[in-house]
Length: 132
Image 1 (tube, helix red, strand yellow):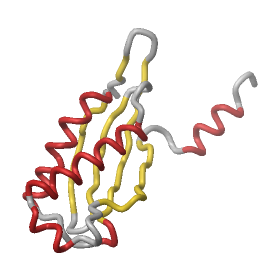
Image 2 (image 1 turned 90 degrees about the vertical axis):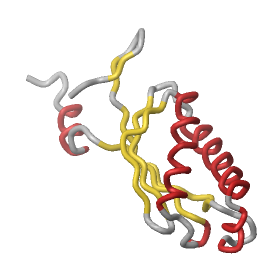
Image 3 (image 1 turned 45 degrees about the vertical axis):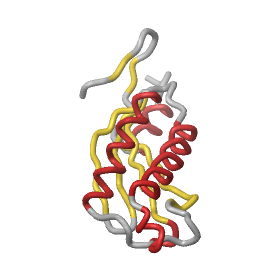
């Protein structure tokens, strides 16, 4: 397992993000997904985030990414959702007909940490610290 590091720490922070189109409108095709991915790749550099994997369905996207401890995930998500929504609607005005009241993304999202040992293994490891 390759760990990331900076001057003072070693870490491995993997996240699985799911973003959904408002009211699950089916607007994502391969070209739109590719453009959304380009926007993600551009914005993630400013937040010390590295894109690992990307895929989509017609109404949502799945993203696997790595982050640093200093990455501000909520600010990153807001910046990405705002910029991608604005750019997609500007570049593809016909998409507005498929949306609900100009909204592209749903306000909610799913963000899950991934990798490493199962939580029960970590709990047992912590419980057994200091015991012989």
